[in-house]
Image (cartoon, rainbow, N blue to C red; front, side, top):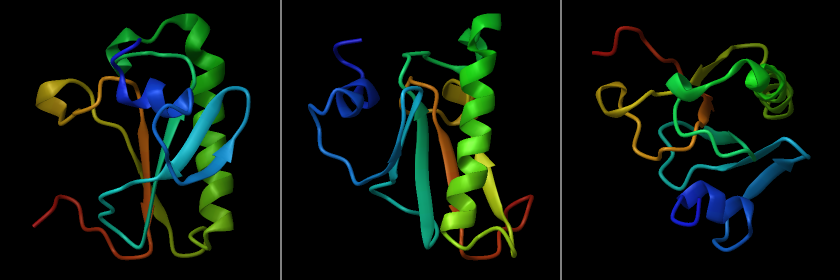
Length: 114
C-alpha cells in the first residue's frame, strides 16, 4: 500500500530504528515508547487488521510471536516478563492499519489498567 506508514518503513522510504529484520518481519523501536523497551513487530506483507487474516497468514503470525520471544530475551525481559499487544480496528485502539505487535517491558504492567 503506497500510503501505509509501515509499508514505507519496510521499503526504507521512512527511517526507523530497526532492531531485527528477516524475510517475513521487521522490528523497530516505537517512536513514542510506553515502557523502557517498546518494539513494534510487523509482517512485511501488508495485512490491515487482525480481522483481515487468512489461513495462509498463519506462518507469519507464528513467526511474529517467536520473534517477539527472541527479542524479549535479547532485551533481558524474559526473566521478569513482558507484554505482546496488538490492537484491532478503531474500537480496539488501532491507529496504523497494518498489523503490528507492541513488545513492551522493563516495568510492571497492571491489568486492567488503573
